[in-house]
Length: 125
Image: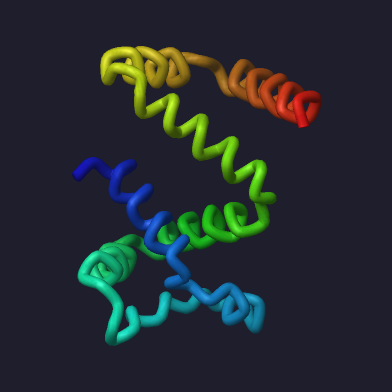
């Protein structure tokens, strides 16, 4: 399994409520997600185990992404799902070509593209 697929899988597992956010608000010390419920499925247990295998930095990144996702409106979540679906429908060669183009951009160019994209999203909202 590729690292990005693994991270995506972990993020989805957290989306299934494996991480109580209120516990994080109590103090700055990150806590591991609780074990799956006894009636939880095999998939949830696997995701929890995968999360435990992540480095503390990766766990924190997954938690932050989960928190960001939880704060999104239903409309923005749906838009994100649609963008992801379109991305997945692209041929692997095209996705790799786009990734390579992104990697070759300077930090300034990436910043400008992000700024333009955010501006475009706000206008369409």
